[in-house]
Image 1 (cartoon, one colour):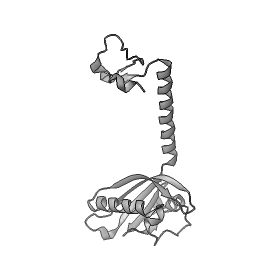
Image 2: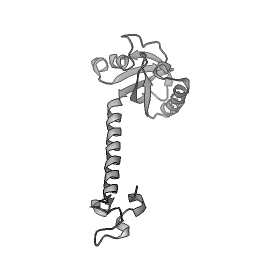
Image 3: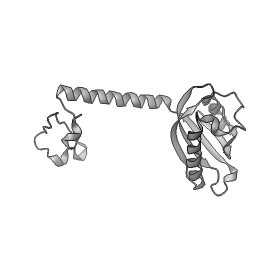
Image 4: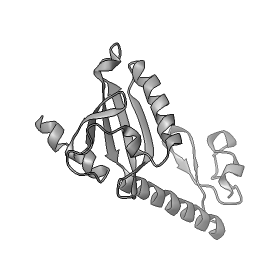
Length: 171
């Protein structure tokens, strides 16, 4: 009980897509008042019916097979805002689905934004290296990194088999 109530991740017990019980973190994630989730359909988590139906079908197939369902997606809060969450859930007993399923939602919005920033910075660095005529870089065998300039010149003793094709180096 204490773990459920103090977890830093949203946790719900569902039966037939209806929320039976939700911890406080789940209510906070979806901007809902304390105690207002039980009895609600999980449809309230989605901006549109199409996404809800897709997740419902995928999830039901997985949990009926005894698997854990996992998906990253954008969720809709009741205040009109949204967040990117990692949803995962599993049936309490796959042979008796009427017992329900435990679902968890983790807000990964900040992590996804940081990943996007890293990808953007990598792209800018690659573009700068290309335009400056310096190394674009290729990975060779045994964990060694050999650098190749934009003219596809390899270090002495490094053959084609050790490097990615030159066309992959040029942007």
